[in-house]
Length: 346
Image (cartoon, rainbow, N blue to C red; front, side, top):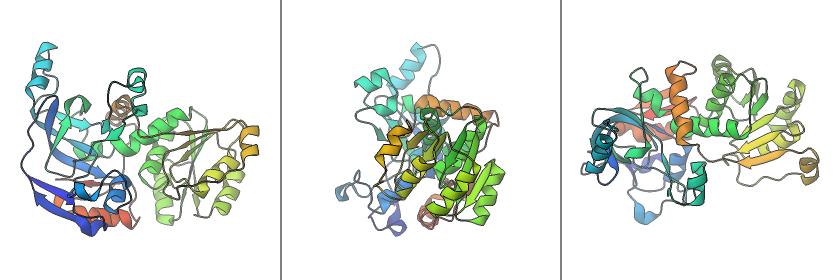
């Protein structure tokens, strides 16, 4: 089979097509014929050398978290378990979507939940290939009405956004501020805020992307990247009940300054900087909440599949690429021109 492998940490030019042996399912595994795998900034950080999880001695490395496709083969254990339960469980021919969470299953957080608190939490890699070897118990059934390309857009971006909204306790009527609303998590948050019946404020530096955000349902869009200008416009709209912060850096303090008393900020990223400074007194005197969030749960992803099946929303896909165009997909992501997801279709 062919894979798109990272052979170095010099950016998109380090992505090469290689040939490897087909994987074989062992223990509780399944082999999936990959029809679509979206890419994320997580993958880009790895190939740019900005992720400590991959060392030089692990190269060539195949990334790709968000796998959708058809089951090609399962291990004897998976087939036997399905028969014992009176069904075929995960079986060859099934259309599936992978939840990319990797957990130990035995720590107190796995026992008590949610699973993304696992002490050894990690992420699946290996989807940028014609076939992927995956844990069978992380596969979710994909209805025929949902394309593999649409499904592959869901796991990382939409699981993350939905779990953040849950952690922020967003309900109908709330005002939710999403700075940097045109990346994967930002777009997902804008759409899901609407699904929850809340109201959104999104920001972008592009007039074209501002139009796209409004088309997706953003209630208010601010065209600026300057925190001072953004803050002034948000103050004219109202005090947000929640801030979905995937940027970090200076946007953290700005969000805290804008939130209402008792407001909730959820942080999942550091695109704008890994260090944020805040004024401590206004933070605790206003009873504000700041919490972290990583990915989501398998139940979150199952709920998202149901929503897409019911046409509650459709994730925008900005571009699709053949496997041998994976380097171009990362180059497009690096330029930050895309709106929505970029999907490789092996």
